[in-house]
Image (cartoon, rainbow, N blue to C red; front, side):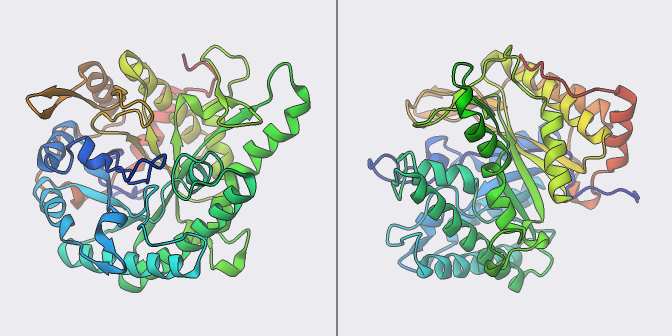
Length: 414
């Protein structure tokens, strides 16, 4: 037994794109179906087994299992069977930008229905699987509030800052109620609260926007986590135990130049205003003192191996400075389409190749090679045994590697 156990059976995690938003007033999307994860779930988990990954973010599609308050969770049965067969521990994502058509997120009914749904999902999955149990109540509350509250991309199609702020508060209220409901069924359930880790700078020709950029980086980014932790709006029932595990999503476009209207503009890899990921992780750790995971990260196309290498170097630099990091999630496990254009992003561990009506999974070999290198460096398994959940990660190995490699946080991520 280790004296420094991790939360999970493997340090490397993965997951599957599972958005269910009502998108641009064109109807409900189901990204699980669009990537064929619904019909290839066993194959997908077998791939994770071969990669030595025993943890996966897996979605429960709230809009499809909740019809006017009546729940049918049988859609989870093949997923549960595949998880058991392959020895994969799920982090259940309960609301990934989508909610039932008959609900209004700004109402008490939304909070009540979400709590009821969370409670029943907890009851359903715990009856089929032994613990530990992990849940993400509402994915990316901050981004969801931009996407659905200010940019008008998804329901509820808000187009103002006021609506964004109201949606963020409503989603936090529901998420807190969801955590409490889950723990009525599973008292020791863990919550993984996921949001993007971002850094915003003013345009070089608009120094007058420095205050706005600073506010979004050091205030707005943390509001949802602060509410979940009980630092803001404590009347909603947040606490450090509700915040629990902080999941930070890290992509190259998370460092941006401020725009007054619409999404900000991503900084280029050679931009001198980029700040080191390791330093940003340190800020999250100092603020909350809660376990952290990289809940999503990926590069694009041929840049995927280099991106993983840089993220891992930054993570070890952060661990070396005392950050309690429990895992890195290579997301997604299989490719996903660009929400706007439908083109494949080539950001997954596996590429998807259309062939006679199916999407064949092809692991991207250079990324797999880079993953293997880090597994060996961290003394991690490269292929799962029959019972991967029998032992948690020994984080002493990760800390040891951090000190032996002596990586330092830097802004070079090209």
